[in-house]
Image (cartoon, rainbow, N blue to C red; front, side, top):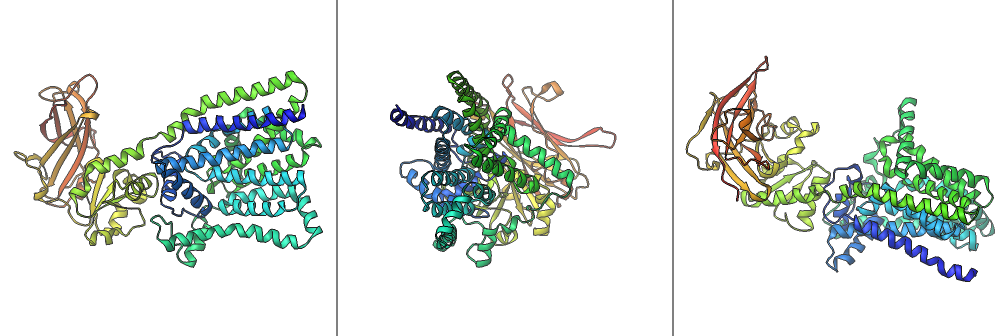
Length: 634
């Protein structure tokens, strides 16, 4: 009977793999990241790193970069998209972590159905699920922590002192991969400490071999200078120099974030946030069960040392997140604590299941219902991140803008983040933007302009105070702006447009004494039921006031009241609201783009455009009005 039970046990591990594979595969991020969610802040960077055999931001993540790039290269041989391959790497690593968690449960004599159901409950907790569906480093961190515990557990069972070297090497890999793994070392010392002391006492030379095994794992960092030497197209920082390499490895540029809380009030607030994040990430029932399970296990003899170790792992993880709350994304940084608490829940579930067959059925049923409930709750939020089309839409907008046709040397500027990562991916990996250079805020923009490049900036860039007009003025002396299609702003150190850039039009329309509407161009977009309208303003003389722009579309022959307006695209200032008219130089021509979308029930046929200002009493004053016919939508 016992042999038969052992032969049936692997079916539970296969079930864990199969179920997790279906769940993660159904929500895998397939295309370039477009989500601005905090979970996905670095995803676009890692998509580029894996696709280009590159190196990432501090601390470099060479193990992830190397293993992910190798994995992605294999999948690309089967025509798997690089972005899909990067996400699939996380999914496979996460599944290995789950398989290790199940094996750890079994080593600690947790019954197969209880072990499998508890493992799956961890798998569908939102932080674990999302990190299995996107290109991020935390799935590998958890896998390595689980590996360390699994080696220690097998050492405890088989008493083979060679496990000490495997454990040291795994610890080196984990710490080298992510510094949060340092927090697991005291917990593992509690668990494996007696075995380590015994092994070293028997043969003191083992201490040296153990240290060598630990530090040997850090040789993976040679991958970073190797990729610099071999010419990777995606290298973070300057790791080709000794100082740049250590700056990357030590994370020196993030030193300002790694500071303890300023006072007790901040600490108390951070503690509340950490507990709330930990509990909501797992759900309060699982969090409570895990905490109680660890306490119950400490009181028992069978799992006392394991429970103390896991409790210490959770406590050190929470303490770090509280003291250095500015340095971490709590939802990700607390994943080791979530792992520890989930293992505690397994102890509690087994202690209840041991009370009889009815208790076993009740416990497993409750765990399974918890898995189903979490799938229903978390599937939508996970897909909201992995299916966000913003990155793809940005690439397509820039492609359709035709910058390579408008300029011989176009450069697109985007802030380091999702937009930059998406454009860089299209430039270097898919080659959709191969003819357009992409730079971030570290570029010398004045040198680019002096060298003859035309510079285009994503409109949202100006939202950020540190990248508003004064920032550009400091670098260019004075910044001149003009809009372009697809939400792009052209930036230069001198007026951008000339008379030759104007499209043909019958006549100019004056807007007061100092501004005229010189020309316009309308282009329908059938699939969006919209029109793209480019207005060309000119300053006839110095403009002493800031004017706003109105764009009112109507299905009547004239816009004679609010009821006639079926769509509008007003702006607080020209150029997407970023270029106040008081900055304009006499004679300067400024392009100003707007999008008019047709409502479902009324199709506009004209658009009325002009400028206006609001006086101190709140009254509005229009400066001219030009009616433009809209071409029909097919």
